[in-house]
Image (tube, rainbow, N blue to C red; front, side):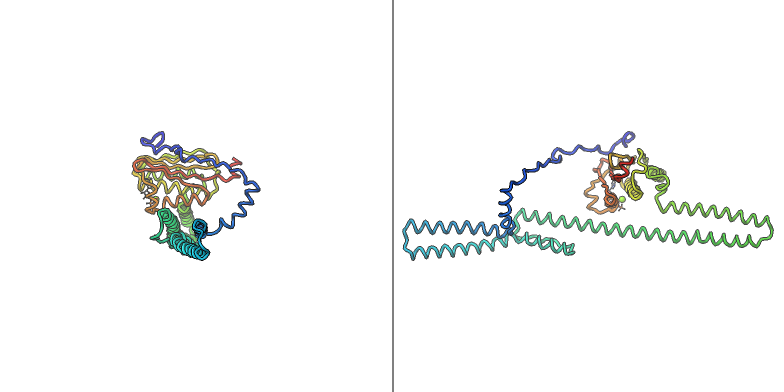
Length: 379
Ligand SMILES: Nc1ncnc2c1ncn2[C@@H]1O[C@H](COP(=O)(O)OP(=O)(O)OP(=O)(O)O)[C@@H](O)[C@H]1O
Ligand SMILES: [Mg+2]
């Protein structure tokens, strides 16, 4: 990859012109006069849409009817009885049109009411509620309903993944506990019991040479047991992370993967020691570990490269490979937990993960973790 890669992963694309942030000019502050008008209009503006439209329509119809009555009366100089009849008919027309308007509006706005109801049900904990497709919705309302449902769907997918990840972590912790119990019971406890017997034997041995031999054996056994316990303890935590720091730990991990798989993995790092808190180092270690595991499992790559560097107030870790690449949106939809877990881990410590990949184009995973402010200033 990079200087040694035959087929580098995609170079960072310049942001498309339309993606450039559009500066928003703050408008002039409202003058005192505008403020009073706004204050007066506010009660009307806050009236529900239904009543606003109904009022507007009713006003138009009423003005039309009044104008018609006046014109009729003045053009034909109608007698008072006829005028009253025309006025009564006009009034009946107005009432009828208001009623018709109300019914039509109720029907037309019912999809919005349904959205509101579903939002309240979701808020009350009914997370699987979805807005039904309304037969009276126009195209805009249909789009709004679909977007609303899609939003709820992605929220519940997110929750399901979190649950799955928590379950996987619990399983892993349970496995680890079993392994720990087995190791302590089958190895450490047995060794200590055997040592105890030998020490007792040595205590009752009167022959000095035989006793020295026994004690030598005991010392040797203790040294071996100590070695096993140390190796076991190293297996519980990422090797070398505490002792040597993140870069050396990742180098050691990459080396052992390279030896086991034959994939060539380069690790480059500029000085990042001491920039991150221990839990952030552990998170970054796990993110790179998962990214490399994915390279081995899925990428069919010839080379991979891990880079660790400081960039401004962040530490950035990049894992690139020259393998088959994939469609990140699809991979997310299909629901592996590795990529999801990477993002969650990064978010947990205030960072983020970008996935840059396309079928046939290799993959680049970039994790950006902020350096705590006091450390950033101190170093
Ligand atoms: N470096 C890569 N090269 C090619 N495909 C990849 C790479 N990384 C991820 N993928 C694709 O993305 C999918 C999702 O990856 P993810 O790590 O989320 O799940 P997984 O590896 O399949 O399972 P797990 O939950 O055990 O990690 C993979 O199944 C694979 O198709
Ligand atoms: Mg994975």
